[in-house]
Length: 107
Image 1 (tube, helix red, strand yellow):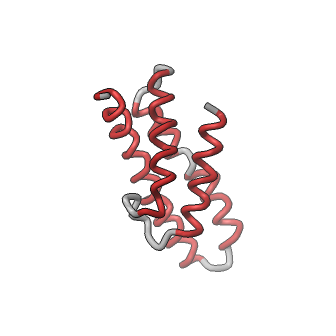
Image 2 (cartoon, rainbow, N blue to C red):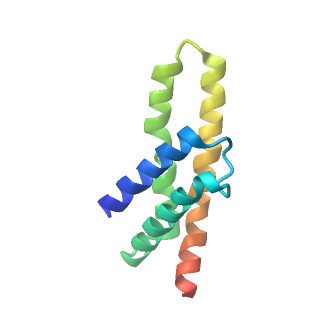
C-alpha cells in the first residue's frame, strides 16, 4: 500500500508539472488515473470504503496548500488562484475513486 501511495504521489507531481489543464481525462493524467485506480482497488480489498479512499485524496489539500502559501505569500491573487485550481483538481480525483471501485467490482 505504501509503495502504491508513493507511486501515486510521484505520478501526481509529474502530471502537475506537465499538464496544461486540470482535466483528469486528458492523456497527461492517465498515469495518475491508473495509479489512483490501483490504490482504490487495494483499499477496497482491505475493507476501506470509497468514501474513505476519496477522503485520503482530499486530505492532500492541507500539505499542498501549506506549501503554496509558503511559496506564494507575496502574491495573494496567484495564491488564491492556485488554491482554487488545486481544490478543483483534488475534488475531481477524489470523486474518481468510487468509479474505480465500481469498475473493479464488476470484473
